[in-house]
Amino acid sequence: VNPFLSLLHSISSGLSDTELSAMKFLCRDRITKRKLEAVQSGRELFTILMEQREIASGSLEFLRKLLQHIHRDDLVAQLVQFEEEEPHAPDDQPDVHEKRLLEAAFRVICANVGREWKKLVRELGMPEVKLDRIEVAHRYDLYEQLIQALREWQRWRGKDAKVADLIKALRGCNLNLVADKVEE
Image 1: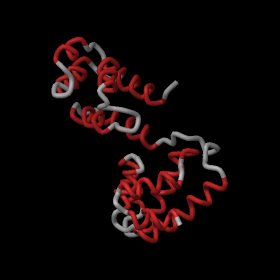
Image 2 (image 1 turned 60 degrees about the horizontal axis):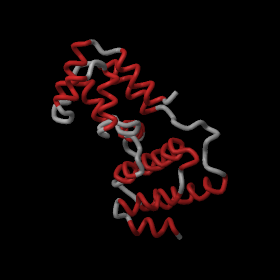
Image 3 (image 1 turned 90 degrees about the vertical axis):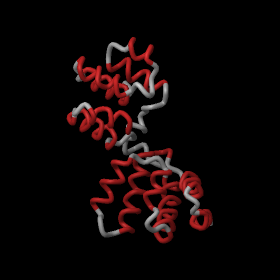
Image 4 (image 1 turned 180 degrees about the horizontal axis):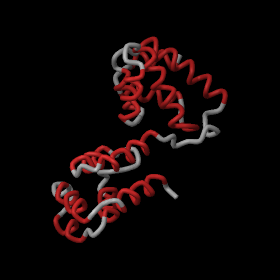
């Protein structure tokens, strides 16, 4: 079973008719009136939101705002827990050679990227909640924030964590000098 769909099903099951009505009202600027009138469950609402790319497994901000507006902190907590879970098993990590390359790239990045570390890690697609946790855990240590964020990204991506992705993200943040150093 897809964990994301399971989450949406669980949230949908926990919504009262009043809460669903409130969520539909909050979606009026994103979903046509005709579609909203046909919605009878949270599951149907979430299906439309997924089709319109308002929510996705890695993009839950809009759903979080909806749940916060209807004062369902328990469902927000469920959402946060989903975001924090590891999508990859421990054995689903890069091979030994790629791990060595990643560690070398991490050293170069940590030595050359300063306060813009969050911009870089966002470019890599990490959920905002993970960045906030790392920042709080290492509040006064910029180097540690960045190395922990990069390691978390590596665990989060599993086998898909590649140095090429780091270089692409660095270039996407206009950190071309650092990208060149990583390529060397």
